[in-house]
Length: 193
Image (cartoon, rainbow, N blue to C red; front, side):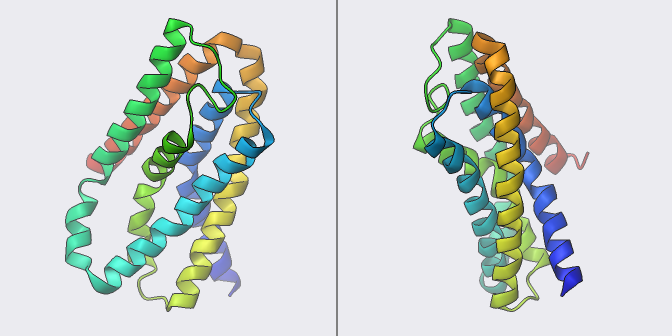
């Protein structure tokens, strides 16, 4: 049982790195965001990191061939989604757009898009937990989600701290970070680097 918890936590930590970076970019972009958004951002990433392995687990158990075909599109989807959101933040920063309470235009739809883009690779975790019964798969996903919440909360705090110091340039930096994360997901999945 101890090994299961440690393995799930380490898996969660590895999966949370993209969401950590995006959380940091969100904090950079809106250092004065409300308490609600400070909870909503890590909770959204944690929710997707819980959901995606379970979807992968379900797909492996039921419709594995369809999932394999979809998995080839995962890096492209992440690149497009993060590139779009990051590009939008970058353009707004270059135009000198004002900082909003929720992060330079980061609303519910953009946050959901970030959640999908940063956790879509967690679908493949469903392959590694496919032999688990449903209770054990749910427990592994819950541990991954808890780790993701903690890691993203830390990323958001770091971003908010430096966001106050960077003032108007935070949106530009946040946009660049999101674009780079999209490129990293794409390159690592397509070229295996």
